[in-house]
Length: 315
Image (tube, rainbow, N blue to C red; front, side, top):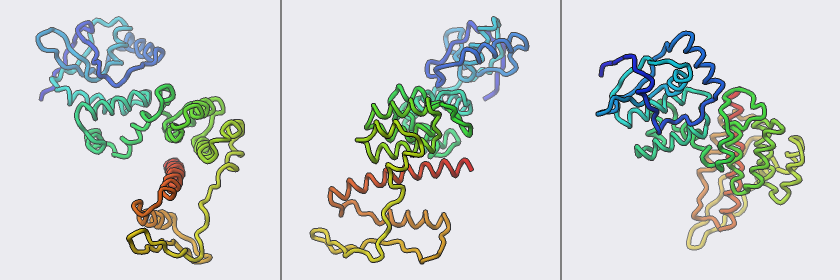
């Protein structure tokens, strides 16, 4: 397919209602308009022809088109491509994923919309966009939050939060979905007290461990929160308890990870050993009480794991 570049009047160009970007900063847009007024548009936008009418729809470059209107430009350079809706949607996602100023909630909605319209899994979408499946999952997580909180989440990769609710904060806030009033208070505390993601993780762990003392915990500060949570699981017994045989089955002895006294283990070795232990869990053999307790411990481990991942990524 050849590239067709032409000057097209801005009045013959219309926006795409499926455009991922919903909000544009007026001040930034005005700055771009001033630049276009002085230097003209140096980078063409991408449009597709609307057949049977002398009009074009934006595929990539809506922000530049809006700024051109503010600058009073009559026509702008456009790359005309006759793309199908599926290709246009993918192109828009790729362009907007590279922009830090795109709100995480808008990005997540666009990803979810693409999944629904194109019938894609997270893995399929990741392949199309050239990113990891894990990253797609992270981007979609903001949709797990109530809309009023999700709309406040900003993208601040590798920069101090400075009172903003970042995507890393959001990963911990979603752990409080079952306590909406407390969740809203934590969101406000993140902003007012400028909590780091590590402090937020500790606060959320404390609240989940002692929800009945939420008001008291929220009145405290970061150094106090550790007192509400036992940061370590109980030590493994020196001898494994006697195996318990489920009804109609044979006894299964639990697996115990032993560490020789005075020895040190490599971090990766510890993680691999933990994975092996988790792999030995057999939900079908658990009593209802054991299931509840195991779920709570696994949720706590998930919070710890996410915090550790963030710390390792920041090093």
